[in-house]
Length: 138
Image (cartoon, rainbow, N blue to C red; front, side, top):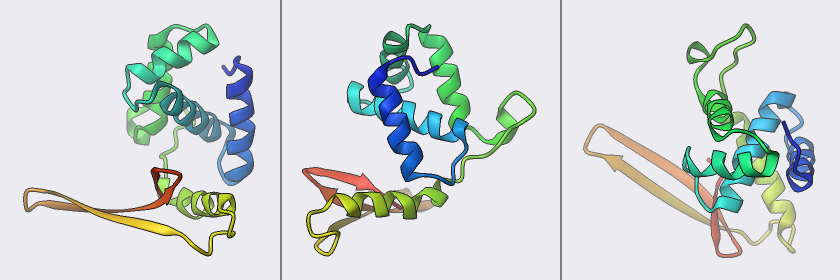
């Protein structure tokens, strides 16, 4: 599945940073994050198109693989279905980000965001501000 040398390298980095994830979970996370960074989009049409070009695959094949990666177990095909527990990645992601800071993470800026949907739902997001970007960590 990973033919592009840069994507393979990124997969190795992600695997080292998230050792608790399975090979399939690491591969999905690597492909999604690499595709979002290079296509500058998180769209379920743009990311697969870019990855398909890199790996000489059909966009619909990549799209279906990426879609199944984040779906709940009941929506997936096959015998070895798992559900993505994104909160299990918060601590390893934050540790990784903090290791990138020259101060070792002692001087960190955080952004808190509350998004509400009418009066039914509120989502609190926490992001680390790093090099002009906000990296969502929880």
